[in-house]
Length: 575
Image 1: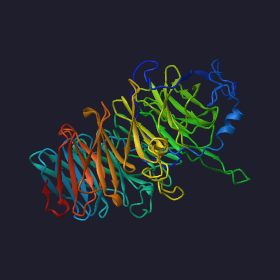
Image 2: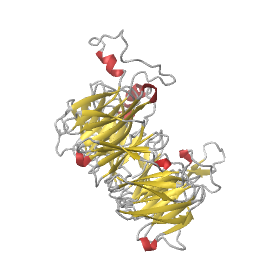
Image 3: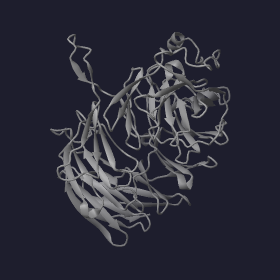
Image 4: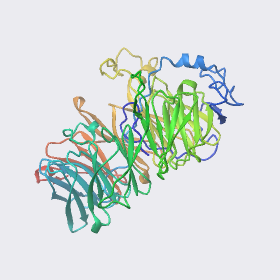
């Protein structure tokens, strides 16, 4: 699934695999709610089910609370900031690490097992690089020569390189989950490279089988240019998404003469034109189901979602009790989940028949449901809001419609979970960050009493909390600066987090054990900028800001550290 949220989004979040059974969260707070059907033709926001009066007297309101009153309570809340932390699957290949070196026109290939290096010559100014699934292979855009270099590495032998011409100006790559296919395109949001004459031109890339490798330039429906590329779970189809439409690429058919299928999001009357001319409908949020059957579209401020049948290209509007502040689509496309923050409700839209959806609504108490994160198995969802200083998350049981509140000590900025679904990671806000409009507040201020002012001291720190669903354990970790990139190695039950503050000399990687929640820091010789994983050797690699190139390998099993420095000068040392 792919979304481009209404506000700034960092990356695509992971989801939760939660324990089975009602009340499995066990993290304190009250459970409340329950699913009831809702129909736009007969039900209003204040009349949607027999359990509507649950917890109506609480400070959070209830499902039967007056809708106008609820709206008045929420008028002060700003929009949700859907900042999704970097918990995505790492890009490292099975054994090798690939780094583009635009100054030397080469790609550095590091063997994580033997710590040997190879400089592979590619085209002019290599930049954007992606590995090809779990293969020991990578593709890189040569921005100076408008081609891609495909690098395939054989252990003990070396790397072979082949080239394919691509559309001029490309600065972004998207690769299918299995690494067999890819698409190069111009991403206007990246800020890299000058805008090409045709921002809608992309290049379809076939990497496997090797004998059939090819590149095909074509245009897409995404205007003025692509904002995202999504893939089906099997990687056979890609969806190039724009604000006004998308294009479907069936890679089984890609070859000379092939053209994608173009789908428009439709038109609407121009609100600025009294004569009623039509303009393109612009969509803020797009989720595509993993099977490629349908997409769910949402517009900010509209009390509906749109369901797009990708086979028939029919768009079906689905009315909701209020405008959703966030929408998630189940991976299999069976339903969508919408956060109705202003009504303290969550809506579930069943999509077995996209043109005849069934809607259920549940009341939420103890937490403001501004954002929702579904689990991969669709049995639970995490609810939270970062529109104000709410120090709580909620876990919604998708079977019962009941929410369990999980109180925290700090306000919530973003939420993600480990791939095994056992632990939620909550990134917290800091009070007084020192950014414009938010003067810095020192947690070590000597005027603060360590006992009487403990809550204020905690609010002034950076940090995150680990929440285990099986027993409700919540452990808060303070960090000396704003947390950076994250990587979760599920097989090792560990999470890795970069910490960087050049002014204070902070250049560490925090390693958190996801079983007992103990964390230790690894101090680095240079500021960390990225994290990746070499699964075969069970090593996490840390790219660093260093004049001649530096990368450190941390063993997930022993914690030992090995560092390679100087590879950009073709004169490296291993420490």
